View 1 (cartoon, rainbow, N blue to C red):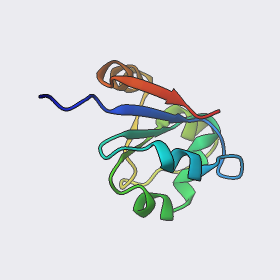
View 2: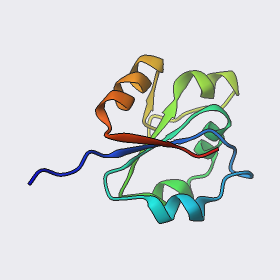
View 3: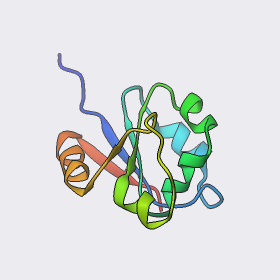
Length: 97
C-alpha cells in the first residue's frame, strides 16, 4: 500500500490574522506549509520552525521580496514556477484564508 500524497497548506495571512491551532489540527507528517502573500511575515518568527518540525516550510520568494521580508539561507523558498510544481506534486491543497 502506497503512502498518500502530501497536502500543500497555503498560508496567505499574516501571523496576527492566522489561527495556527486550526492549521495544527489538520497537519500530517510530511505535509508542506507554504507561506504566500502576507504569510511571508512568518519568516520573522523563528518558533514557527520548531513548532512545525515534521512539515516542510516554504516561503514564496516574490511575495517576501515585495514585502521587504529578508529570507535567510535557512528558509526554504521557491519562485512561482516552484509553486506550480509543488501544487502538481501534492495530492491536494488547502488555502487558509
